[in-house]
Image 1 (cartoon, each protein chain N blue to C red):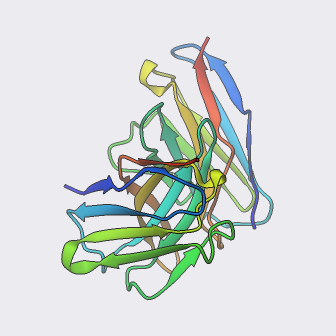
Image 2 (cartoon, chains in turn yellow, cyan):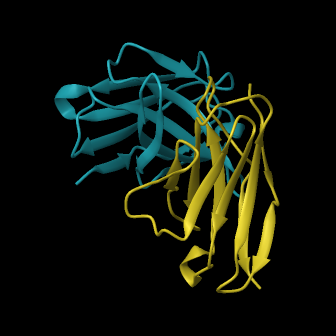
Length: 107
Length: 122
């Protein structure tokens, strides 16, 4: 199975900050990567697919980059509604696997 | 509008069975794959099973293989997850999700059910 390692596991940030979350795959996955946002008590929400493509309706302050084994999710200017947990997920090979999550908390 | 409405969770004893349902609307099963993803209390996301748009190809996580079965009823626009020989470690919130993949691109799980809780305990 491909292991997805996210870092950091948590980050404290203020409104307006730039936040960067990284995800590393244990082997190359091309650009078969998605990012999700999950708030407590709610289902995950797709933010980014194909490593860098913004899902319809997602604010442009979210962006994704990377290919192969190293990927990044960036929030350019953190907003109050962005405090949540973020997960990366690979779909290059079975089984699909998720990173352990990064909790973005209020500083 | 795409909607996924889940039902069927609950409390079950170890070794018991349960069937989860995911009623979909706003899209065709033929065009999209469907996945089940679970989340144990306080933990991260774990993929459980998926089915492609043809309904022919299914896959399972090793942790549930031989115990869980994914299926669908196109006439009812409903996806199912039949769970048997349930264990305490199957306790989780289960989500169904619509997924889009082509041979060359991955479009992610772009719509999710609201989740249903399964508790395996005596």
